[in-house]
Amino acid sequence: MSIVKTSSKGQVVIPKDIREKLGITPGKRLLFRVIENHVEITPLPDDPIKQMRGILRGGKSMATALLKERQKDNQIDEKHSI
Image (cartoon, rainbow, N blue to C red; front, side):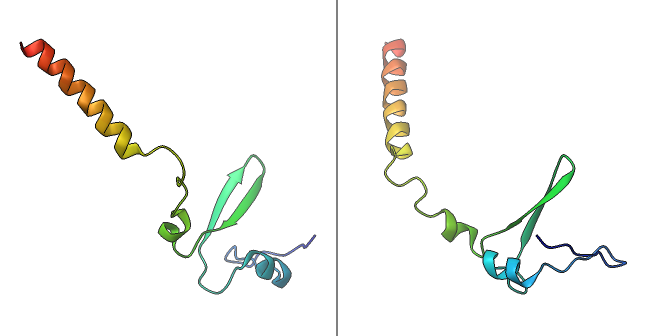
């Protein structure tokens, strides 16, 4: 457990062991969230698009599902237009 002080500008220094463990380097973007009475700090990925790549791999194809839905809608429209 590390205890740090805030500067007059509200800045804090993240201890070196924590920076190394979380991969926090100069210029790294961090997300701060207030949760009840404490703050949660989360390092953000350097390339969020690359980080999300493949997250839905192996699941159902949304494109296929949308095409099937469109075909059903077209069939209903054809029945009603006759």
